[in-house]
Length: 245
Length: 314
Ligand SMILES: Cc1cc2nc3c(=O)[nH]c(=O)nc-3n(C[C@H](O)[C@H](O)[C@H](O)COP(=O)(O)OP(=O)(O)OC[C@H]3O[C@@H](n4cnc5c(N)ncnc54)[C@H](O)[C@@H]3O)c2cc1C
Image 1: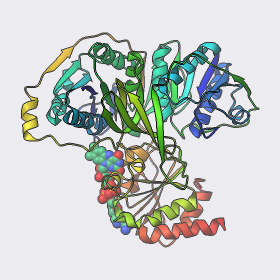
Image 2: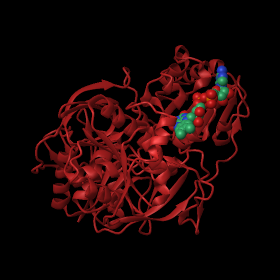
Image 3: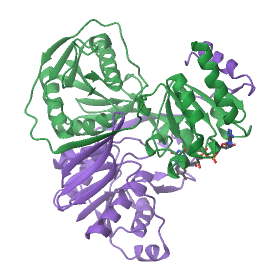
């Protein structure tokens, strides 16, 4: 099985979020980058598990500049076989998806696994865009994936529960929690990652949207403390003051 | 020209997210002097309450569709038919599957998870898991928006909409749905759509103690949620996990008991309109993000809250 896993870098979850250039640019000073958690914990690990069970290869795909190389090496350390980086600075999901699809279209992948969204732009658009560009089936928010020959059985988040779905390969999916368990790379993985191939490719893509302005949410007012034995008072406040119930 | 809303159905009724998408489309259409049209696939009673949201017409495809590529073809054909330059979906599992495909098919720029109507050529959405907002501008002629659940709300007051049959060549289904596991036996509102949420963390000490959380949720008509470690250790199902790496929610009320308020947890819940924190530790970081707080033992406080609500309703 030939598997492509889309890996994005994202600011560490504890990063201070701030902007420079009058709110036009994310302030990356002092920010640590990690592999986007949904890509790493769920998409990548499930890809590696499927390869271990059925044979094949896991290639990672990242759109970005050379600054992304450390997170790509981490994905290789966890167990991907090789990596592709589309050398571009994409401004939106459409451009990112075009770059990925233009690489994937003649590589005969069986599966393209993505995380459900990145934790910076929270777009959740690239996976389905790739599927449409390749004219492949797409399963959003997949929590489970098994492959048997040409047939994939999946579970996905749906209204009020989990839906079971059957799809033939090739397939694009976006992975949500439940798909796999996080893997910590071991020393051997880290050593071997250094010599695995990281191929840099060029392609064209056109953005159709861009962020004009970032801003931070307004500060919360002070928290009103209610004594522990006055639960009724809290309920009264929630009803009369906050009008929340 | 018109604005098209894609409205998913559940058991023959538009989902709340679908009604929100219709409300957004109608409000946007009104701003632009256009009319809003809704597209549904499956059977509905009369106009499915869509007219109330402000849409003037409902296009109804009689086939229930679950396949994202079929839905995409149907929606693209509908957009063409109505001359829609703006298409609105809900940012749930349906909008995430159909919206981006549709954007590609219509050669449209897409902004997902918008929280308000476009203003001065840009539309607002949350980024960094709710830690910041971005105003995004789209350069294409056709635009696709998906609306964050619970951000815009369902509008009413409009008059009944005309329902017209609609069909298009949608190709074969490639995804076959073979089963369904309901998240809760008692029909709680799904977490992303819930207006009231009661959530608990490691402070509850063990899964056997969740009765007090469920009782409070039941008394309120709320949906239950939990912190990440609680779902990781298997005390609660994964779909209850809220936060930066779980589900992002913005209910009207979020009650958090025995949750410390780590930055990753806050990221997924800090857009809630009102936050109540119950924690034994007065220094718990969650109090800084809360509107109301009780410094106390969840095992005592939650049953009291439940009793107070029952007393109020009695
Ligand atoms: C990359 C990454 C992503 C993450 N994503 C998420 C995420 O999406 N969501 C998430 O929730 N976490 C996430 N986390 C984990 C997060 O950092 C915290 O570890 C987690 O939120 C803590 O869960 P908790 O508050 O339930 O437990 P704790 O931090 O252990 O807090 C328990 C709280 O309960 C209180 N308590 C104890 N007994 C009682 C009692 N009887 N009554 C009332 N209060 C009591 C304590 O004072 C304490 O404040 C992530 C972490 C990382 C590194």
